[in-house]
Image (cartoon, rainbow, N blue to C red; front, side, top):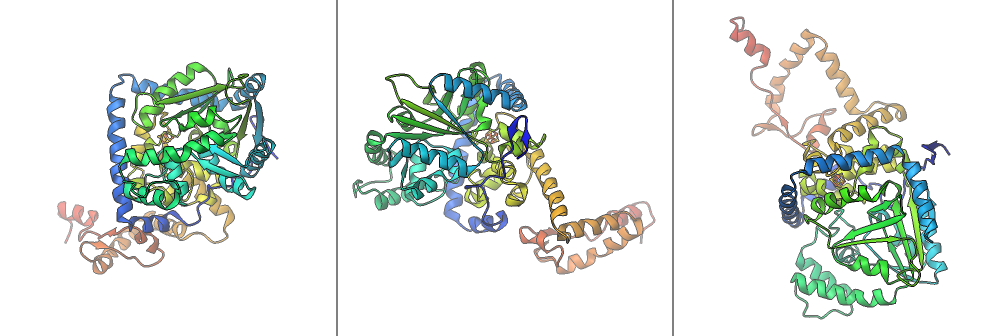
Length: 489
Ligand code: SF4
């Protein structure tokens, strides 16, 4: 196994990261669901407006973004050093640190820890890292029940569904759908349950309360880990996380290695950026922090599982590694015109939207999520919204280039796109050939209908699978120019 910056380089990730069908096919199906589009449009426009209002309150918002970007870049450049420092600090305060190269190892570590604690059920704080590795399924295979306690994650779990948004996993569901799920899946719910938000939250609260009180193991992710003291941090809105982090005797945290930050001063920057960008709040209602074990207070066995699962491979790409700067606020999803129309399931990965389009292919290897870097119009809205200034459009173009290059090395036959581009290059390299090709515009006008060409013949057919082609103009630029200068017919 090779190493990078002193870290073992993990194989491409497994778990819930790989697409099972290409984005264009999944997106086409999602676009046919008008209820989904209504739910998404309503939810994302609401969050966008809240975010814009609280961001506008800060005169130094751009400076904060630059500071966040700089801290992340500095941390990634010395990630091995900060991870070693974090491990030493957590261990010194009575915690245990485990290293997992991939999803399989991480799941095995957590399963063994739960068994060692003599438990057959765990309560969970909302965690993308555990979604990424498919922890709930792995625990179920080992006979251990995992109960999601975040309201949106609970809706997803009870609905036998998949998350579709980083922050609001059930964003694709409306109130009536949630009431139906609760009535169907919760044995202890009143049959008179309404779809009022307060009634739904109350039903979930009663349902979860018994789990909080009986579970002896809690499982969480972490938003940040502070290397200098070994402190872990979870930010959330509901308080369910605080219950999972404090009531059980054993606490297991699964965290991607990129979540480490050097100091508490650095944390102060992110605690201003994250809530404003995610929920549109000035501050998270609950910010929980813990440092190892405190005798007689909270969990008495504290474990930190540091997860690679493709991250060191992403780190090895000097351009692509910026995707590891992400603080999972989801602002890029909420402003993305593609995400707003297709929703998160079309991306086929735990990480949907613009950040998923640049992160998932790097965690799995570009070939395994090959269609994701193309799932964008490159409008740049994600870059403008990102609190740590990740230039997602440039990353998308970079990954498209990597995909084309890798395909060139792994396929004997060139793709239809490569053939078309080579032909276009040959035509445009010669004035006579270019003029002759332009004469073909007449054929384009002949096959057009109502001002557009909806279906081109191969090898151009792929272009019109997802969009119309414009009708060639009746007059080319050259003809117009010649006429203007008195040389044309
Ligand atoms: S890429 Fe930026 S905007 Fe998108 S989730 Fe990550 S931090 Fe937020």
